Image (cartoon, rainbow, N blue to C red; front, side):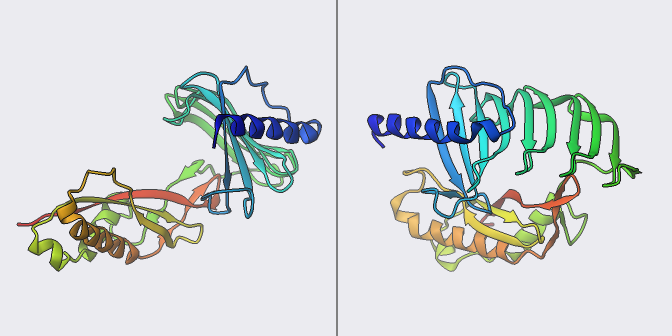
Length: 272
């Protein structure tokens, strides 16, 4: 995209946002921006090339070369879904008050961050505005917390975020990595060329606990010599195959609701 095209896109987005701004929850006013990035996401939070098929639009406005704010909007309604200030956008370092909303406009989540850590109160609400959770954090950990049912009555406390649990061993990441390594089969062509190393594979544990969206991490051009490129691709294929054989997980949860969680696992190929 050329610089002039970017300016036109930014202007059109500003006009589109203004058309429904009066119906939106009020988010802090962004300071003068140096750059705006816009991405579209599908239901699995995959980035799309355009608005077609998207369920969210995410706009990141940079204050400088490091810090900025991200506003995410529901599509096609265009209503504000979240407002997140960052001390560092690239490092995902939250700093300030983070707010998330239901599509109705009702506040769903609010917490204050300092340098990526929750400080003070974290609160969540049901769609009708009933308080669901109240926690007080020190050193990024809740020192007090209480949870409530839809009727407003107290219920047993549970953590806001719960990671997926693998169905074997201790259920932690170490158990998952061990299961992957047991599934690895060293490719013959890589053995013949004595090609070894570590292949990083990304995947998602879906809301149903099943492994999906498996793919090897991209490598930089020139990192793998041309003479062994085909053998290295075989290592990548073998690593993906090993991850694909993972059994289902107990899904991750956020405020008690199942959520998709991304993982990256290193698969080591070593010649004895």
